Image (cartoon, rainbow, N blue to C red; front, side, top):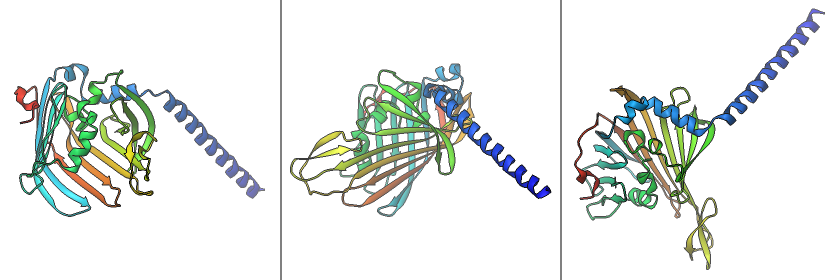
Amino acid sequence: MSSGISCNWRKFALALSLAGLLYSAHVYSAYAADIKPEEIVAKHLDSIGTADARSAIRSRAVNGALHFKILVGGGGEVVGSWGRVSEQRKSNFVMRFGTGNWRGEQFIFDGDKTSFAAATSSHLRSNFAQFVNGYDFVVKEGLLGGELSTAWALQNLDPKQVRLEYMGLKKVDGRELQGVEYISKGGSGMTVKLYFDPETYRHVMTVYSVGIVQKGGPGGVTTDINGARLGPDASTPYQRDIRYTIEERFSDFQTDSGITLPRHYDLQYTEELQNGSTHVYDWNMTADRIVNNIDLDPGNFHLK
């Protein structure tokens, strides 16, 4: 008799447990459906500082140490420096090595147009700069570099140009993060996904991705992963897809004068090319000095 009671009790407890899980899943599903991306953005901005503290910042200068490394498709690493100056929506982002043929990168937005400095001693742009130039809305709209700039996209949202979609909780590197997709009219086939810590709402990661499907042969076309036509292609009947990815990670958040910003910034660029080769480049940066409301020469936002 006692054995039967014990067995029935276990079944009853299991049924209660399953019911609880189903109820929790239902509640979370309903809760997630009610979350608006604008609410996440508002909480994220509050994680940087109060509305008064943020509105008091008109300009910012950031600089620190840089460690560049080729992770895939070659070898080598070098140290250098990086800096970012910004004034409202204007920005100048520089990564410098000072040695070798590849000297670094410089991306500028003067409030109207973008400019990209030659990255090599032979006055050519790097593959990374060419890619960013092709999708320069990430510079114009203040996405690249995140909240380290006063031009940060989420502080300057234009509903006529940008739409946000909530993606729910996403597991990234074993960690659950709140995901929001950033859809810009200037996006040209690029997918931009922003990730936030679900407890602090700090922005910890952005992933930019582009996939290009090659359809060769006479009369063939090149399309992105959504099927949008990009242009004619008259090459071989079969080609590999081309994929480009930028991953930005932000960490080591510190508060100074009521403003909380990351002190560690990692930028990784991956290109998977038509010939089957893959290259991965990594810029690991520390923000050793951050100064707000600094007087900036207007020449900072013009390519020299």
